[in-house]
Length: 213
Image 1: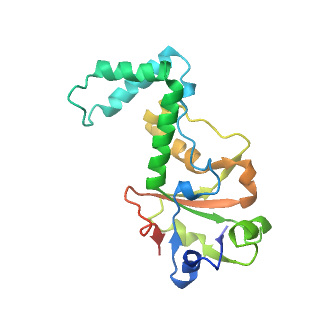
Image 2: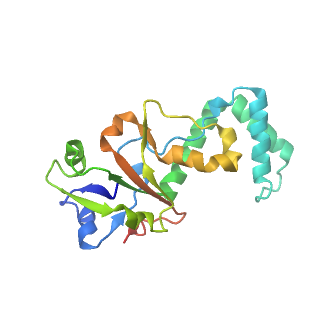
Image 3: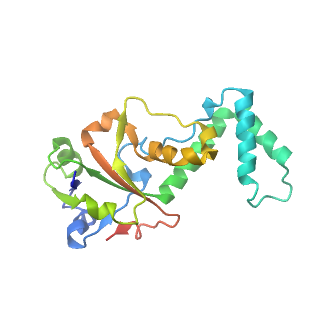
């Protein structure tokens, strides 16, 4: 594959900038059509035993050991708080974590979604103003050789979205794998898009600096 394609609506000034300013826009997950896109966060219901919860608490403590802590912090108190939250308040803990995770993603993630084909009728209908817009082809090597993008690849479409075990969050060998699962996995419902995605993270995104030449 040498070319990737972006379907656009000529009526929208931001879309026209691809041609008038040689500029692409890196979207936040909150603006994507698929509400589950990038929302695969660690699933605490996978910690099904007291031993697994205790192991998670210990790994979490080791992770925050060098971080700033409140004056009344003790490892014993923090350990008990984690164990209690996963034992007695797991549903609330999951919802709170999902909310925090989504807010972080929306601020830090920049996504440029393209398709491997230019002639998909549903994409002309959905993303090119009902077949009245335009489609731009990009040389894939131009993006692959651009150091500003950290990841690039085809979306993996699955009948059932995977779950990430929270224990793997502390495993350096699993971090990259989990990252790809989170950001490059979608339901097979969206398979018609034939998506190829480029991805970048930043802790200082604004609407203006999401624009890339």
